[in-house]
Length: 429
Image (cartoon, rainbow, N blue to C red; front, top):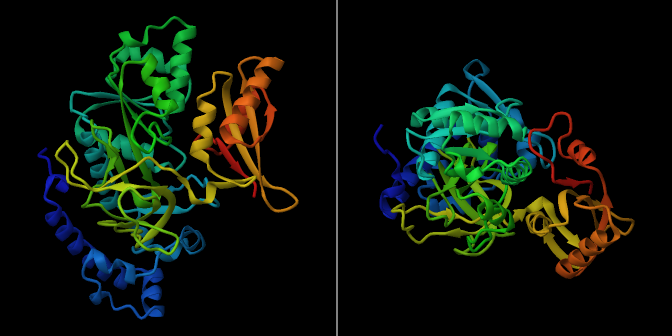
């Protein structure tokens, strides 16, 4: 298969392509989308007047709440054309159903094919998938179909069970793993306890999903360092969401996730829905291209990132996104400081005394945020407790409440009955 990606074209070519795609999308929405027809009518928008990306601010944004409340009105095809029903993980509020046609599934496969190519994937690679392929999880299915399109080998082991992961790694010799970074740390810990020589395995790289492995300056964060200090593998970070049906994946340079310009338009917006400058934090706002069943226009994802637009030394000329700084809804205003969940996770991941954790946020009587950390400590001693509290106080300048629980209890908290991802953040506000 020849390389079709437009990421290597000039910026002018990429912009022309996106302008054409945007015009086609607006016509399509005007014709088929109950929700957007109404938006255009209410706001007196003539879709013909939107010609280029620079006209986008004339269009209203779409919020997660609108997508939750009017889920079915976003559907642009009759239900007989829907092949697959996926759903968001419902991290924030009720899950949203995203339906896909056959063409959407092909587009999803192309998206992950391009992602794995970007992450230096080759047809002779063998990928071990350490994630769920059921429970309406779009990502699992996307990785699977993208790797198939690449022509590489696939081992579907599913999430958890370090013993089984290692057994397959040594028996089937995968060259790459696709996994959540904190689970890779658990694999390393298991290997240490069972005298497994991890660097004698065939695994050379990991595609990291669902959690940051880098700081915003692209240096490895605590989680990234924990992995690479023990295991000599290259890490590639990815960022995606079910709603955008597209992924931003790092190349070997590790300088942010590359946009796939034929599949998505991305804007980073401030509080007033105005575009931010490169290197400034803004909310990732996406417009899907080539989606048939549930296309979205200026959809605000709730994720805060920065973007960089200078060319990458890999030869791609596309915009790149930083690691997620935080989710808008998960911002914690705690005793006068503003804190995003990823920063809190970084702190906890960096503590030798903390084996596992869940952060719970709730409102107190006076309406401000309280943070309760459920922690599995390495030792149940006063010394250990003192070190944990002192470290948190020093780094956060405020003291969250700490509750020590067992490994079994944390497992129940992180994986509630219908869960697909480990819950590290529980919002009770």
